Amino acid sequence: MLDSKTIFNKIGEEKALAIERELSRCKAGEKMCPSCEGRMNRIPITYVMPDSGGGGDLVGALVVATIQAMIPNKKEYLDLDGCPSCGLFWFDSGEMSNVSLSESMKVKEKRRPK
Ligand SMILES: [Zn+2]
Image (cartoon, rainbow, N blue to C red):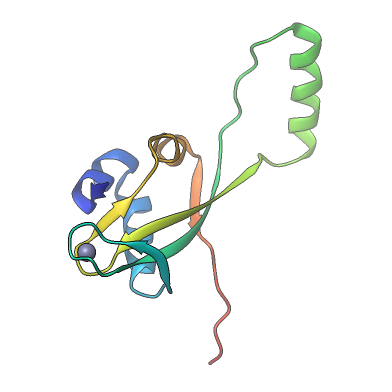
């Protein structure tokens, strides 16, 4: 459980702001906020991990490099829970480090009727 200040420090201002902006627009999820006991909103996020930079055997690395040249980096998907009233976010530690390492992060666009 992290507050928005911690998120800012961990994943950077740009990503944190995108998440905060989306928080107020998202639907309520199933998790309850441990602080105010309100429902937390569920924020859908996609992010792109940077190339892992080799490792493993040489042939494998070559194959990986060839494939990476042809296709864009893999997109990861994550649902983040956040409380709109307290500004608290629920991150798994793995999710947090993935997002902070990611090349780009996007809050998934939802089509809304006008
Ligand atoms: Zn709350």
